[in-house]
Length: 218
Image 1 (cartoon, rainbow, N blue to C red):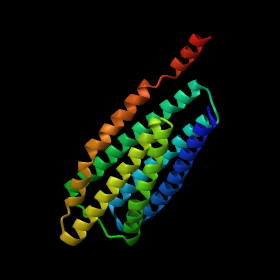
Image 2 (image 1 turned 60 degrees about the horizontal axis):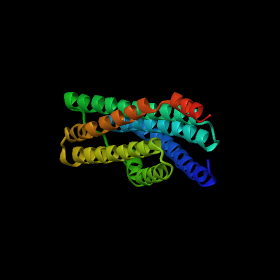
Image 3 (image 1 turned 90 degrees about the vertical axis):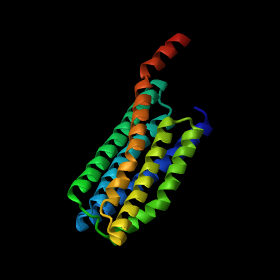
């Protein structure tokens, strides 16, 4: 691996470290505020942040291996695992969104106001696009589909942030209790499609093919 590519991979890993740290902050603030106020929207958003943190952790592991110059077989193996984790993360996000949205529609539960919760949502509106841009930039420069998918995952979190803010706003100021769950359901098809794409690419990543390629070059 040349020095320039190693440098780009390292920078991509730094972006993932920043994402992990911020996602942990999201989890702590949103779940604390959500359970304190009984806001299922904030709790759902916090659980999605747990998924984001999990994805970032696997991405750091995958990129660190490539940065250290591990074999092509191990690179593909880590790529396969990372893509599988991202696909699972998307799927879990879909399930939680569906659960929260349908539960609200059935029970008629309204979202509660929380200054801390709204605060972290507003901060995320600014931070998440920057993280997504960094992941996509280095994913493109290093031809890393896992970084690109993680950038999409971060933007999904951004869309969900907007949905939660709009839902809480309409419930609090217009009394439209159904606005939050309906808005949440609108992003489910998009998230599900990305789960399928990541899973498909994970299936197509075959570490054993790298070994066969090495044998053919001997």
